[in-house]
Length: 99
Length: 471
Image (cartoon, rainbow over all chains, first blue to last red):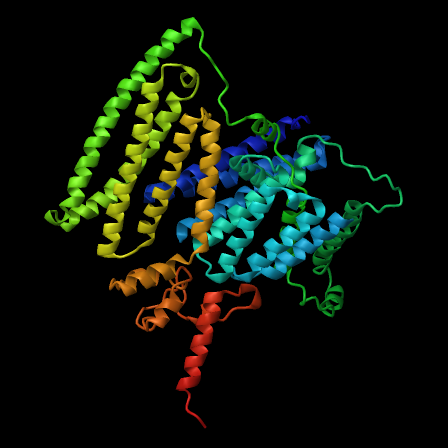
């Protein structure tokens, strides 16, 4: 059986950050969908700004590291893709909540 | 090369069908394209029953989107497409594993070889063109030239003037981006791969309980557990019998109660009863999880379990009666239809629980069968145009609720028009499309073809012709 690839330290942190953003964002979305309070929407907006800032920094970090270190191009692309994947998911959540 | 052609074609088809279009016949055409594309790149896939069944589910729900286009049909079509990808990746997997496999391939399928460190297949023929390299040779220089041209445009007016003579207005950047997204989706799913070790573990897991005859020390512990089970089930059976008797009294003397009592019993009682049935299934699954199944003197516990399953089935019948009475008194709504579906799933859950106990099956069996049954029930549910059914039933039985009818537009528009209520129903908000014109729903491109919209347009056109005076 083939083994799962190990990512470089920096990219691994970026992937964890993307995963955490997805998990926390989904939890807030589902809570807002179930209970629909304004306070939860406020939490969601604050979380969104924080997530954009942190993941933006992560993306910048991935780019800088790809120039300085010998990281496979596919690893950089995959990590960036996973970070950016949160954007359409967030847009979908916002669209559903605004219906 | 064949793969590259399909990927490029996938992008063009995706953009042609979906770019700036509502959902309609385009979803059916795209699912047909996916079927052909996957059949070409995965030889022999259509011989496997699981793939064939998921394919039928995908195509039939896509047809439902074309015919009426309710939200549930769209959701189930997307869900069925993911299931189909999952089964193509690994045909022998359970339903829930196929969902995970489908999602995995849809999102990161193209990175599979990189993620699992699988060496890429080398072409044995040295003359064969490397398609990926060829794509890079075209796309990367093109992107760089476009970027630098945009920058150099600002450098001097002469270069800017030369560029202004090149008319590229026929290229729609967003169309191209949509096509790229379509190509990416196609490259992800063209050769689906199973998630490992999840799929292999699922294959190895049978539905039967491992025969586990307890040793002498464990036997005493198990006997105590069985005793607790017997006492608990006796108490629960008595309690449920009392509840069912009170249900009988309530339904038999319904006229003595206020109308709000039935409403309360339906709204709160139904959900509480459904939760109690789910907990009951969980409890039975917990007691019969292991060695208790193989004890020789567990006959009493077994009989009590069967009785409890039977009483729960009677409880479902009583909820069904209450819901039916409520519908006949207040009309049909989506929620009330939803309760019927829940009850159907509960009955299926009880039947599989009975089979689990009777044939000494494990929890995985319950999970496998119940997810598969739920999926099939929801697929069948999605095929029907419920807004039209609900509207027709309510009009025929004298429950005219314009707010309800309006909320279910446009799928019920034909029924409303047939009954002469469409003009009376304020359709300033057409379903969730906030528009003031009916024409937004009826005037559609060929990609957006919807049977309800088409028939509505035909009827509207016929009426307009009648109204126009003859010259």
